[in-house]
Picture 1: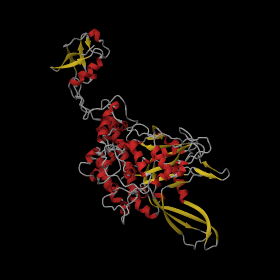
Picture 2 (picture 1 turned 30 degrees about the vertical axis):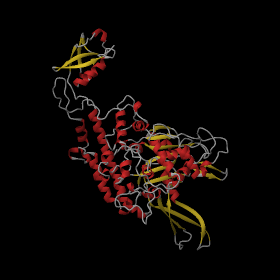
Picture 3 (picture 1 turned 60 degrees about the vertical axis):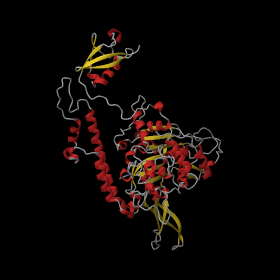
Picture 4 (picture 1 turned 45 degrees about the horizontal axis):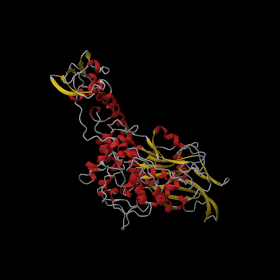
Length: 617
């Protein structure tokens, strides 16, 4: 039956609405709400026989076209139309759908290629690498200048990351895999065992070590230069015409090794310096924590011929880091060669790793003195931020709780005088030393003050060193795990922190690329760029995609993951501690509570490569 036009009368005014008797009365009440702003739970619609209820029968009421119904109730605020048009998920193209769903996509296993898939996904936790490679957002102009990429692998890697950012389906990495095998023939080795032990869609190629693939991919892009957009104004990008290299600046540290012997005290220590791309965590029968395994690897005893004694002597090699990069790679040495069986065996011992790591203890005395002022103050600031988040959460919960409104009105129009939930919570937290009366200021006010304070504490040498950590404090952002009992079998997976994808993009400075790649530093971008930047995206700054994603969330299809915070809070990503689990083409949310299951101790997934990112100020 077609809808009929009826009238409703409220507060002396008459409104025309449509009534469809084929739909339940609740739908009609929603139509009344749309014109009168009376909430459904406070609305009374007078019909034949009494008040319209949700289970009333339209046949018994028998409404007629043009009939007038009396409505009683106190109106609230009228519903507002969406600022931007709603686009349903089924009407989106692949790019808009990927932005709306937000969850990153996986990579197909092409036959024993989980080692490569996990490497690619873990490296997505380095957004600056995508900037250096020239990965453009879907909205970037095709005429935009691309960086000059040296080597064979950078361009296929750039294209692969671009494909991952522009689709909602798993990506086939065949093109990248073919080039990887050309550049590194070891990954084209055939499986002679015939077991096909690694998980995949077929045999043929042999299993490879994910840590070796991780290192080889980074080595293959070592000629990629640091773009000017990642260089702080006033800092020179290289000297003598040689521009700085991204891997060297952002991912490589420097270490000083000192070799001395107590058997020959008159022999001067031998000191050497070298660049490193990873630090190793040795695992033995006494290793329970990652830090102790790293410290064990930094101090070792070797035997060599002493030039002064003319015989073999025991030497102690003590290593300390003299430069900490922005991204710190930790290799859990879980595979060791066993001479008795002539093969590599997996060390399954459980070794706990932290999500926040203080690397200051690994540094030389000179570097430690430069890091400590900013490092210690940042730790104090993070505690203060955590307390503010707790207060804001309690405030939000108190305001949203029933009966917490400080200005509510009943149906008689009389005011209820109550203390608002926000006031109650803030009074409770007044002792925290915030704004006058215990009220919290806008979070941006605190962040601005904290940044200025930390900027003063950062040592000038560290500030001028592009891509170096200025505090020595790191947060875990990606993990590559190995599952299985043997080194020549099993399965690799990657785990990446959700905030990597939903947090702010890397800080970019003036230049065309800053407009295209997104920036979290709007005061340093050209006019008109700051307004277009999206603080809650990594792979894209497409504002239309962001608007589409926001609109899509209002549809009946839920497109949000567990724990996703409102986009209106620029620091909401800090509360999201969950992770994404990349099992080839299958991507799922991995709760933070389960992160400890990756410590090892059995044949299940054990942390093998850990990627730490220096904390921002």
